Image (cartoon, rainbow, N blue to C red; front, side, top):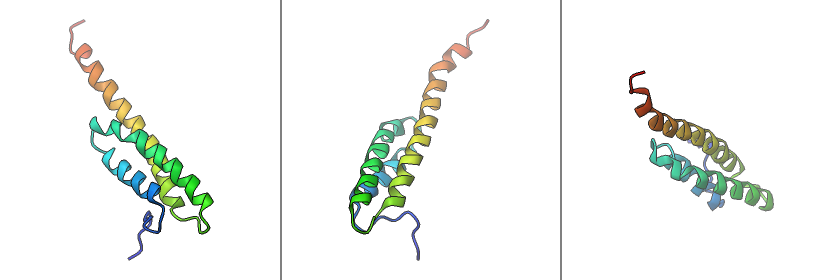
Length: 91
């Protein structure tokens, strides 16, 4: 079975970044993991360029991209939860 985003070939930063992306999908609490996904994904990208075979580059890029997307969604969710009490007040 072919795994598209597998980085079990030695790039531990990319593997950890994928775990952070998975944990960041938890609504509201996931905002704590988004910066880790982006940071470790960037470390994984740097490591993939320094490694002779370029291992884990796709997983690291995926982690950075989805970490930023999920961060935007998490910020939107937090903005909504802060604004909802104001929306329920009568005009």
